[in-house]
Image 1 (cartoon, helix red, strand yellow):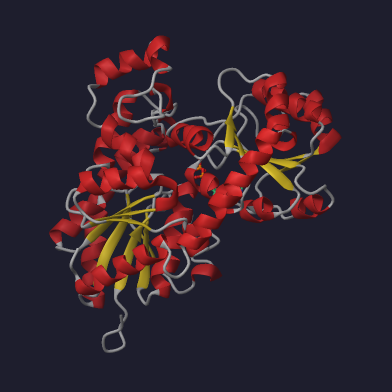
Image 2: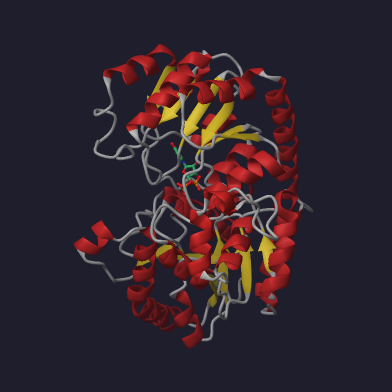
Length: 452
Ligand code: UDP
């Protein structure tokens, strides 16, 4: 990769959110190990630090901020839409400067699919660009399909309970209600952002944090539809692990896990964004207590509306939890999942959490909130058959039963066998001659030959 001692540069453009930052930084590590130098372009809203783990990377922050009131009132989708508007010009300027200062050494710009403002700059400077999808291939397929629906009639269908339980044509086994619509904003603005994210514009390739042993048919669909090479190079957390936690991890939970029986603990984490109502938390706590299984629960500060942390929860909650649980604000998730005491993962089914759970061979209780989490939950239960999905109102009886199914029943033992089998396949895919390993090599070779 080096010509006259100069490494070719890859510019990464992450979305300012944990679930997006983690995989793009892992991708950066993977590409760095292939001989590229890495520049990460941040917006005012990223908190990625140039910590010791990324001391070889170069970080730049582009100007462009939203008003306080926008930040307070825009949901995530409108926020992203606006961020794309305000960052287009400053990113162009940033790339122009980089090219001037460092010569024409930019091999390509890899941008998160939600940071599509990047395309204006690559077009102007005629640089190769690559769209990076941090969600599953199936969620990408869904967004492509949704970007073409008639918004008005789709909205009506989604509201009709008779329709929402039906399978969506062509997307077996996903039902209307599993589609990646969101609680984060009105459907119109979601569909508008989706049509931007699936429009690959002048991108020469698409990189997906997935692998063919999980999603071969969705990947084949994308390959056919997108008409540019699609590189499934995941799971990146196995291929190129790189710690990029934005919050401080509480490692005391590992000591607590050391004292629990093998395969007995339910680990509960709802990712970096999901919020939880007090009523549901109480049902969960009751159900978990009644199941007689120990549990490790991540409750993020701010994840209970109206409360800094857990102080607004009733006394009853603390009592239930203290009987057999342990609470932390943020956990070293992969280490927790790898711990032999963990027998199941109660998850919101974000794509990173899904890959991490499969990667450690842990079956799941699926309680998706929004967006692509619903797609992942359906796949966990129906396609890979390694999860139990909880739908509808939460009540303690259903929670208790789900824990029993996962930890005690034969059904759970079968799920465990299947997830361990998948874990082995994932690990094989990132090893020499595995599909993801070859995919990243093919991508790097294409960059070298400039023949996307
Ligand atoms: N995570 C973590 N500690 C926690 C909870 C989550 O390190 O206590 C990490 C987890 O390992 C995953 C990411 O946060 O890599 C969450 O990403 P995901 O795509 O699952 O969900 P999102 O946060 O985007 O909803």
